[in-house]
Structure formats: C-alpha cells, structure tokens
Length: 314
Image 1: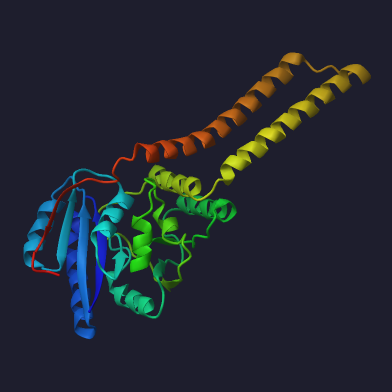
Image 2: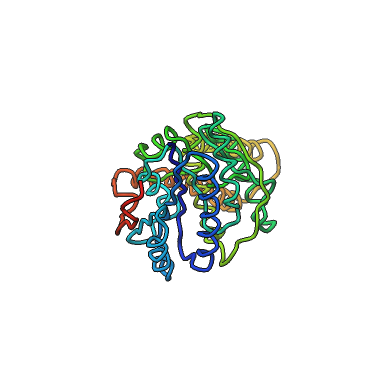
C-alpha cells in the first residue's frame, strides 16, 4: 500500500478550516475507494487565533489527521519543512489553506506522479492579483531567467506533489533560508504541470503583502545565483571607467576650449552618483552576508510545541 500525505501550513485560518477539512476528507475517501492508498493530512499550525482549538477537535474525530503545533510563527516555508520532515510517506502534496487552489485536483496530481513525475506543479494561467503585483511578478520572472541557475516556471506557487526522493533532497539541505519554489526543482527531477483556474480566497485576507513577496523574491535571487555579486563588480568597473573618462573630458575642455564647467557642479553630481552606486553594491553584498550569517548561526528552522494525532493511524 502506498502512502500519500497532504501537508498544509496554517496561520489564523479559522474561517476557512471547516470547508478545508470537509473538502480534503472528500478527496481522501475518494482515493481510498478507488485506489489502494493510505492518505493522511498533516497540518502545521502556528496560529494566534482559535484555529488550533478547532484542529484539536478534528484530530479526535479524524484518524487520518495529524496536527503539528509550532511554538510560534516561523514562516510558511519553515512550516512546510516541518511537515516534510515529519512525513514518512511515499509522496507528499504541499498546498495552502486558503482554497484558492482546489484540493479536488489532488487525484489528478497523484496520477501524474504514478506516470513518472517526481514533482507535479500546479500552474495558473495568469496572476489574479492587482496590476501592480502582476507587473512586479513579470519583473521577478525576467530577473530569474537572467540570474538564476535554474528556470522556475511562471505562475506556479507552493502547491505541488513531491516524490519521496524529492522530499529527502529538500529536508537534507543544510541552508536555513530556503526558496521553496526553487529548491524543489534544483535537483533536476522530472516534473509536469497541471493547469487550473485560481479561485478567490474562501475567507480572510492573504498573508502575502507586497513586502513579504519582495522578501521571498530576494531569497530566490540570492539563494540561486551569485550573478548579482558579479554584476556589482561590473558596475564598479564601469563607474571607475566613467570617472576616468569624465576627468579626461574635463581636462580636455579646460585646455583646448573656452568652455568653463564649474568644479562644484561636477563634484556634486559625481558624489551623488557614486554614493548611490556604492550603496546599491553594498546592499547586494549585505543580502549575501545576511544569509551567510543566518546559516552560520545554525539555529533550528522551527520548534515544535507538540504533535497530536490518533495513535492507531499508520
């Protein structure tokens, strides 16, 4: 018998929890009836509302449900890693709790896995957020195609199926800062797509504001490419060359023409320009140093408060 675990991180999802559990249960029952599968649900919770109380009530009723309670909020990716570390299944499906991507697609994902895909990605035809977010998303994917060592498909989120070897690869990586969308594709395992239309959130508001999305994008760029550092070196070289050319041009004007350029004007422009360039380069270097520092500290990615499940479920 094969085992598949569905892993869902939750943070203050009380309003959508009943609908989520009901739809997941329908999928689990359907799979159990049609295939010789053991399907479990692992919810990793770091909520500050009543979500955990409702989950504990469900554990007593659903033998296929396991709840991992973290001590505090460690972030979505670390909650996912906690679930991946816990599961012993042959494959795991990672999805969000907001029901924007339907759990009813799970049987189709499993079929794609059984046909040979180590990773099955859910692809949206287009982003459904506002135009500013869509423009920023386009810029990010343009940057990743230029800077990344791997190609990350556009309009693909965390919702995906991972084979056992893909799970093992992810959980054995030593880095603390993980760009989940990239690390799962980095080994080059075979992957496939399933296209769906994305729905609106069932309840509540998205936890991903612009600044959090920007942080995730930076994690991706810094984690999967050293080219920004090389770019900063190239920019520095170009700036030095421009400074030399500007100096030669100023000397030429002074010696061979009657044109007079006030020294303070050139000095002011040069200071502003080179200060901006230096700060930009220092910012890039600082991002790399920050991530090196986080990895050197070797702090745990998450801390589990307790795990609750029905003991008879294998």
